[in-house]
Length: 179
Image 1 (cartoon, one colour):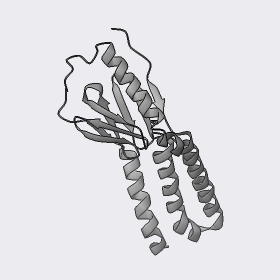
Image 2 (spheres, helix red, strand yellow):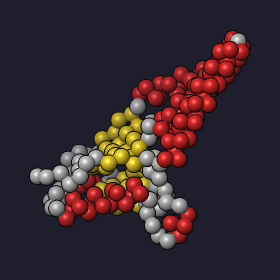
Image 3 (tube, helix red, strand yellow):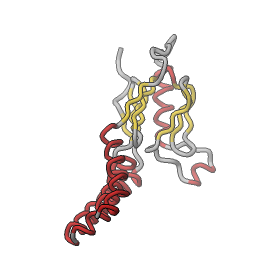
Image 4 (tube, helix red, strand yellow):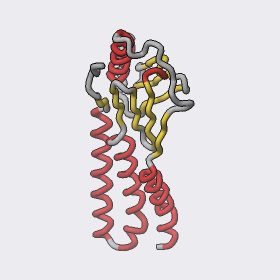
């Protein structure tokens, strides 16, 4: 069988800019605290690093990948893989929300249409892309008689991000008490 299209990645440009800005501010802030002395490091370095980590995870890395195999939603703390047979509805009024046989899936990184576009009933670009690929797969007959292969969505947590958030959050609270 011929594939219908390449894997396409959707991210909000404004989110990427915000993520880069947050990481840059955090890097400059941590650098400044290193120059300011140990009191500044124990008070401000951990919250600044946490700010940068959340900017990277929540705005830079987050994305929606659409392929012939399904929709992969990379959110801040976990990734969800939604196979096409599970997709029941696509909503793009405020980003991307998939109605699936497993329950709703919200994509953190999907760009939303502007207020004017929403008023005209237009969907966001991620929803348009997902709906288009879903329709193409149905028309080509790839989803005829398709059934769910798993009892639940494939989910994978981002352990490095989770560990970083926990360590930096604890450091934010405890280091000023120790220093």
